[in-house]
Length: 118
Image (cartoon, rainbow, N blue to C red; front, side, top):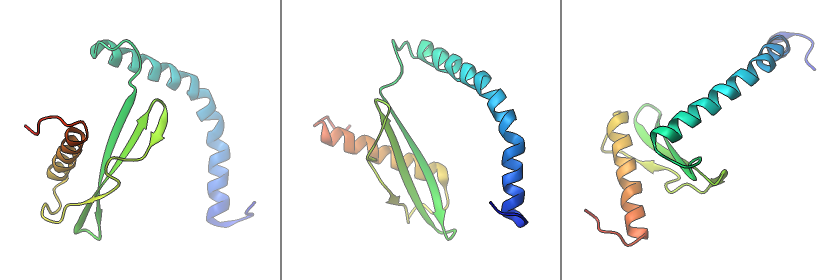
């Protein structure tokens, strides 16, 4: 355990905020459950989603754009459909990069399932 310096100050902060986080946890869990219930009702789903995919657009050195795909299926992490993809032609436009990565995922899914490429 550090006795002084930045690491010591960080650990002190953790120790001071731990009780606050523990006290807030039940409220946050209840809020999350309510949010999930409302999302299921809005989507007319009988239960929780089986698959959730998320995408992150990052910029390396301010010029190279890369997309990462995270996927959870049946509560377990899955290998991503696209681990990382480069978007050299798009530049620094997150929205265009997100559109391209989602289009790529949909095209790959259609190809895998032998669906029309409309």
